[in-house]
Length: 342
Image (cartoon, rainbow, N blue to C red; front, side, top):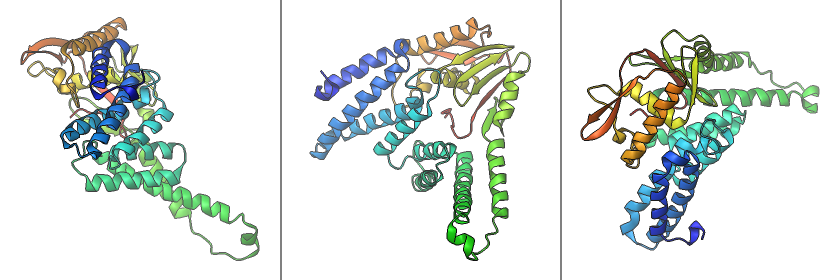
């Protein structure tokens, strides 16, 4: 029986089964969850249109879970360890179908369009991102200060790229070669384009620890990874994969593991360890699932020769974990992809 033929109650049972299997099936689970949430959303929307207002809160809740999965896991649905720009684009476009005012989805689509030189489409996305962020300031997926600045720079560069390409095409027209056309003084604009590109490259990544956060280039991050300081843990959210490095030993992480390790390093302490509730953005994580996920992360790090830095402690009747401060660390990730530490 297809999902379309199931009742809302049956879909909720499937969702519960998928939640219980999160630690077994990894990211393939999220592909199935997205399909379940889409069908739940469709059925609940029909009930709302039939003036059944009692289900509106359920519809809002399903919508939040669906958007969360599309934004956080859409780039990884084929593999747990490698991003896919095509999947990212497709999933972000779906986010805008369910939430047309989502600033972050529009911003990331603008970044992907710019990356592939589709400047006309990038302009539309960046304009939407800025307008939505301005008029929906309390949106869960609002832009941070760096993203706001980058969006304006990307918009400027898109216009400059289009002006440059248009002028180059114009001067090749047959009529332009026989008639005196206005001379365009484009060199100052091209210098602005180069300067903006340089800024975006030099501030493409955040590099942070529990003391400071600075911006840097991708090249600087890669140099740090290739020549890591002694006895220092590095967590690098690269364009394709997430890796952690310690004294020459390297482990590849899933997005969940990278986010979890980063949260422990930045936000936990022995006095206030991180419990499952710190990772429950749209749904409550089952205690055993949280414990299993942390255990897998710790085992992976230990297998790669990375010493234990995450300790266990009971906190408010929950199992908690905290970074013990035994080694310094740096976390590096794209400023275009702010990680949820809040």
